[in-house]
Length: 166
Image 1 (cartoon, rainbow, N blue to C red):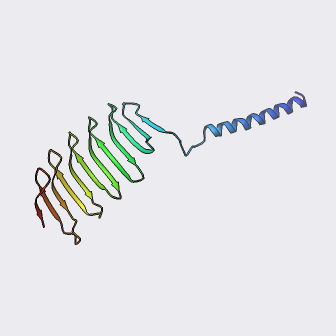
Image 2 (cartoon, rainbow, N blue to C red; image 1 turned 90 degrees about the horizontal axis):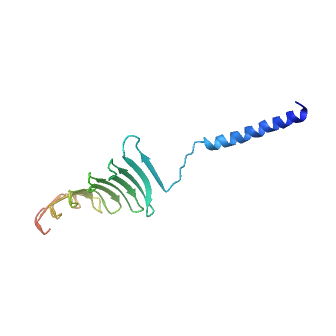
Image 3 (tube, helix red, strand yellow; image 1 turned 90 degrees about the vertical axis):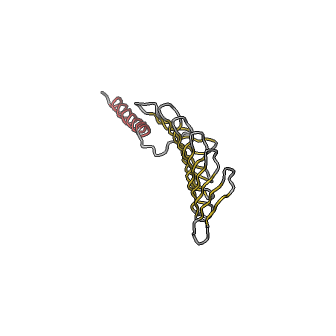
């Protein structure tokens, strides 16, 4: 091998090493940020999955069961955040809501009617309400008096008060 061939081989080895190093560092680097409009996670053993997505600019994390029914949804907006849990038929049964105006846990029956709620009102006073089969709030407990005294209210089938204490 003459001097010219040796120099050419040396330059070729150096350039190949630089290109290989650059390509491998690009391919195998630890990326700390993944950008996508939707990310889906799938199980290898079942059809259950989870999806992180944006709906109308609102981020949502959705968990689907083996039948592809949305069972849990977590979402947030500029005004509120929430968690919704659904039954095996996809009917909302429990919702947790957090915002400046509304904070609470709602419970719905199989038909979708709100049956019970535990919440904080706008003054951060705790309230527990229960509704009948028609979805009318019939029983309520609250600590809304300025001195923290409780209030209990019973209502008729039309939602009108029939008894309160104090």
